[in-house]
Amino acid sequence: MAPWLEQGRSAGFYARELLHELKINALPIDPIGIASALGLGVREQPLSSGCDGLLLCTGRVKGILVNQRVESQTRKRFTVAHEIGHFRIHQARDFSCQPQALLSWDERHPEAEANEFAAELMMPEQFFKGDAERLPSMPLLTELAESKYQTSLTSTGIRYTKLTDEPCAVTLADVNCVRWMVRSRRFPFRSKVSKLSENSYAWDFFQGRPLLHRPELVRADSWFADAPESEFVTEHSIGMPNLGVVFSLLTCQTQEEDDFDSER
Image 1: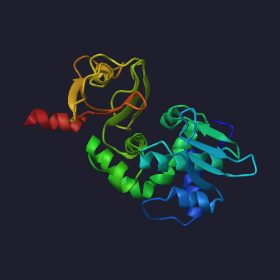
Image 2: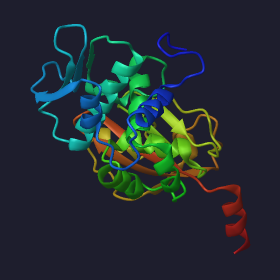
Image 3: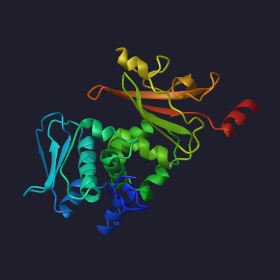
Image 4: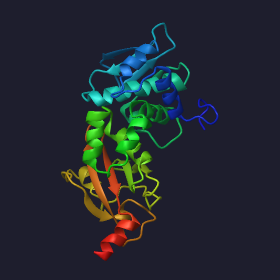
């Protein structure tokens, strides 16, 4: 466990505590308003070294800087929530967060904790649990990210996967490796491959080929080391050229669905 988290408390706990403290119970969550309530001004300006956001705590000026060059408003909102996470969890340290930091989810380090905090802050479980009962699809995740919660697609996908009972997984890959994968409780395969398979549709993105705008069947062992050759999953991948990565949603049928199909 990271040294900043108190025993028995997750990063999400700090977000829920803050929402309760500020009596926030309506969507969409306003991260700039929350920052202001904490005494943190938020300002946009050009930032160097590809930095998405800065938390300034140790100097005379306390606040959050957001890179003016970032075009996506949802990404800017998530960046502010991320920096608030650093402020609440990591006890008044300065942080400079690169774009890749906002894609870090599977390790226990400050950036992953700030992302977990931001996801809970922007997509509270009391609102999201109803959305997690809907069938998984990339259009659903995009709708929730852009319209309802106004946050990043990757964080929305992870939030959905952690809360749903549907068998699905989300993953982020670059040309060299599968960086991380988050699986729902009912997803049957647990061991991800380390390198992106040439048999996956995500691979096409790094070969300069256009990705399909719909889900397609792919061999499960393209993504999972413990999947038999006879198994398939459905893959829907979206490229993120500015970050050099591909975000993918993987789904599979439940045993009940397989049994139903075999009886038809």
